[in-house]
Amino acid sequence: MELMLEVIYPPASAQEPPLTRQFRQAGGVIGRAADCDWVLPDRQRIISGRHAQISYSEEAFYLTDTSSNGIHIKSDGRRLTKGEPERIEHGQIYCLGEMEIRARLQQVTSSSAHPLIPDDAFLSLGEGGHESDDPLAEWLQTPEQASLPTSSAEHHPVEAEHVRLPRTQSPITPRPTGDFELAEQLCQQLGLQPASSAQAAALSRQAIGLLRSAVAELQHSLHTQQHSASQLQANAMRHPLSDSADAVTALQQLLGAADGEELLRSAWRQLRSHQLAIQQAGNRLCDQLPVILAPAHLLGPGGPRTDGARWRALQQHYQQPGPLQQRCQHAFREAYQEQHHLLNSLHHNPFG
Image 1 (cartoon, rainbow, N blue to C red):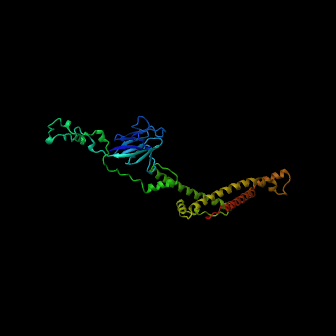
Image 2: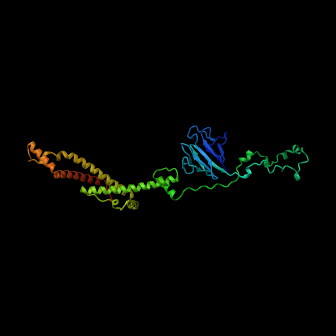
Image 3: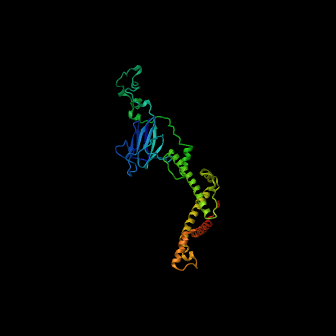
């Protein structure tokens, strides 16, 4: 078997022959460097010095990408994995930079090998295996006789070597289907560009694991938020996802809901509202602390008037912090409920 590679784009001019190269089982190197078996001209230097390797194994030719800019298959846009041999199919077009190269596989039959003595070497002898009686007959033949076709043995061996013999087309390996096709579609929806079907399957499994972990963490965050809101006596509705038994059940609930995206967004919105309300309540408490800790506020308008008496009264409040803590908790809870009510009025949550 022989491999014929031909540059079909950019097309050659009328004055130049097509840029082709024939490879046999020894293989070869394709690139821009002068020591390559097939040197491809490239002024833009997109093609690497050693861009690709042609090899032969188990009655098939293989193309290995050794470049920095890669090799693409024109039919589906798939990029060859660097360093991994790719079986060459008949009629396949490979893109190396701006060049498009078509591959043609040619079967070599035993008749292409030229014996030392051709089988028809003695067809020119006369009847019964004797030469012509007139040795000058060849020189005296008419022009019509001279124009008759000669035997096939008189053709130059190089001409016979490049004649394309009838052959059956090599079977095209079908593209992966089923699970691999589903994995490629999933990667496409996620904006990922895997280099092979195996990598697409691996990325899909990883994405599924990340999705399951994200749903589990979302459930845990909802449980924590609802427990914190109940301690602050806020009227917080339970989110539907927090009632699911586990992450798998919650994921099934999202996929089976009429509007799964809105259900997911409402969960994250509920967590953000709680976080913002906590932050605003903390800021409000910091602003009110000077008022809460003011001696006139702690001791009342009829409290001690001398500094010593006030100091002893403040020490007594410190030793019995219950009333002071209740004032701080009340201020924090009031600020949280106010902020929580404001955020809920801005965002309508149909799920609670």
